[in-house]
Image (cartoon, rainbow, N blue to C red; front, side, top):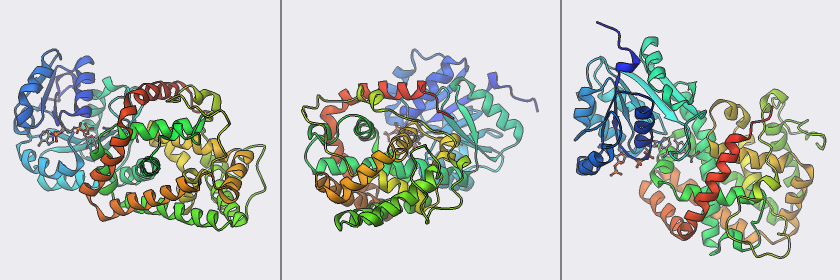
Length: 456
Ligand SMILES: NC(=O)C1=CN([C@@H]2O[C@H](COP(=O)(O)OP(=O)(O)OC[C@H]3O[C@@H](n4cnc5c(N)ncnc54)[C@H](OP(=O)(O)O)[C@@H]3O)[C@@H](O)[C@H]2O)C=CC1
Ligand SMILES: O=C(O)C(=O)Cc1ccc(O)cc1
């Protein structure tokens, strides 16, 4: 049998949604000679129209035809439907082909592949750690060599080279653990902020309370998530068993800290927040550090937090949306969402900077960046702790935030896609009139992040 060279590999894509299209376009522009694609048979005519001006991209009626004619087949469908789609088309896979999946959660993908694919095909899964509107260049692309020779692995690396992504080799289990720690719990925080603001019945940048600096990141990313497809977030949270645990801990951290806040237990709050800070950011994180807390983990070594993003207020202000009318500076924010995030990482012994170096999405990079902005300054952290226990400016928002975090956690724990969709769409409708404006600012803000080197 002759060895297939990457230039002769016929790629197949089943599911021509946003990610499928992004891959087809990149591979076509990169010189891939043949890319067989399909979506649902009912959308065949529009797919033919789409393929017209794409060199080498061939529309097919269904996944049977794609599977029979392709050497490297990528399933790029909703996580919830993957099992059924692989069941349907998997048995038609060409003998000796490599089968892959783009799904954001791998446990169900692995189960479906092992169950339905013929024994004579190879399995190498993939996952681009960015959304379809972010250029893949330099972004992490996870590769999972599950049932394949090293030679097939090299072939996949060559075929995907036009994406110019940074390859990260993981196992299926490692993938799901890392993405639960990075994506799922991060999304839970932003989804909860969005729900809370919707329940407050006001755009956050118009209340005078979420203006400038890291508040800009919070509002922009929240709107970015709600403008995207709900099934992507639902799938990676509901179908990843590790994610349930992380999201539940996040809600518990929000609840624990909120109770300390409203009961005015400032010292206890400070001790807990400092312990979390010391674990995540290390005890000697800056010249302004307070003495280490007795409860801090001995495992918090400087090497575990080697990289930082170091956002600055001024850099972020220019990405604001709306025209905040507040004539006075906003009242200090209790920063419950961020305090709880770092507390959650501490409770679960998660080292976010390890994930940052390994396999971070752009959204996660921003989220660590804002956490770091708050936690690496004693002055800012102390202002948040005092605002949390001594002022009531953010109490209503924080009350809604707690309800929202619990609500998202329950929804994920119960595993209800319908409830998830309904929750998501209620908040999506609230923010929708401002999506276009925030899309423009998000594009600029993410470009800024891409150009800003992670500082050693
Ligand atoms: N969007 C993102 O940011 C990222 C997504 N991913 C993952 O990639 C996968 C695809 O996501 P994305 O492209 O965003 O989602 P989309 O909804 O845009 O695309 C999925 C496509 O698959 C189609 N489809 C469903 N069933 C079949 C079938 N039986 N045969 C052929 N096509 C079918 C869908 O049709 P219909 O809409 O009619 O159901 C849709 O067009 C998901 O698993 C997601 O988790 C990974 C990285 C990033
Ligand atoms: O960066 C994020 O977390 C996003 O929201 C975009 C995203 C969504 C799903 C993925 O599987 C990968 C990236």
